[in-house]
Length: 67
Image (cartoon, rainbow, N blue to C red; front, side, top):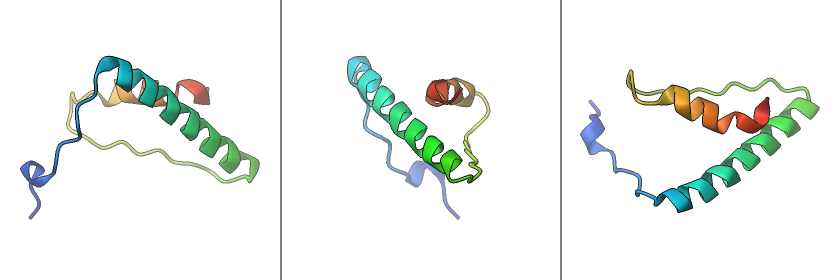
């Protein structure tokens, strides 16, 4: 059986570094979704986590460019 405590934590980022990484990842996701759409592929984005873990905020953040 796997336990959450067995997983390594991601390194913490300063807010300024996070903003840069976030914008880069948003752009990369937009390009991937655009290419999939051009080739008429459907796309499913799955987020998994505990209740109250901020999935809604994350989803808003990463899909900003997709609307």
